[in-house]
Amino acid sequence: MAEGSVDPGRVFVTGVSNGAMLAYRYACEEAERVQAIASVAGSVTVEDCRPSRPVSVLELRGSADPLVPFEGGSPDLPEARTRAP
View: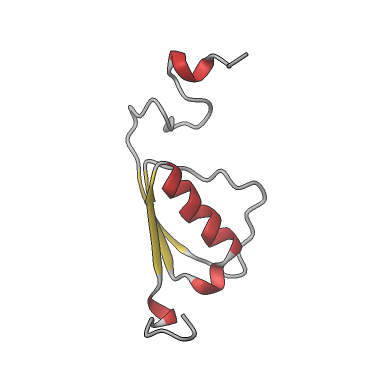
């Protein structure tokens, strides 16, 4: 951003599922570089998130999502409950 034509006051990050979790992580760790994030079908997976300043969030979720449960917790799919040997 320092060498390009990006206005640092207008940087937004978005992602779907794992990308949404990455957007949350970026906001937690690099708050001074982002104005807001939009999370689609993701959740906060960063422990002890303490951004250096507030970051706005648009959260888009579905209550029937089996991969990222609305109430939190583990995925509700048989494949996700089994572990590889």
